[in-house]
Image (cartoon, rainbow, N blue to C red; front, top):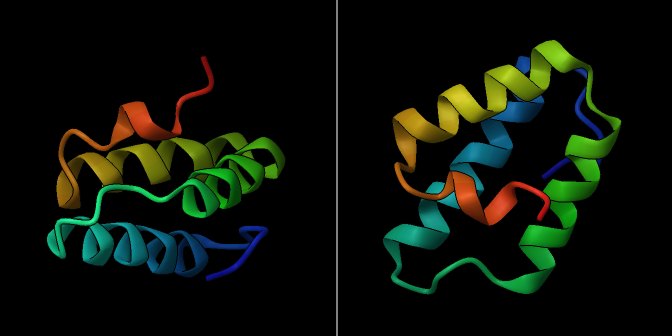
Length: 69
């Protein structure tokens, strides 16, 4: 899973990791939250928007885990 998103493929990989983790019933581990938040902080606004759209589509309800408080 990339630490910096360069394109939509990188975002897709990240969403897949999140989806697989949630499907295993493990919740979102701290390392994953930290990694995704780091990627989001460096991401281009279009990729950020794409990430949240795909997350809503493939891992509904997980968005709150990745929004900064």
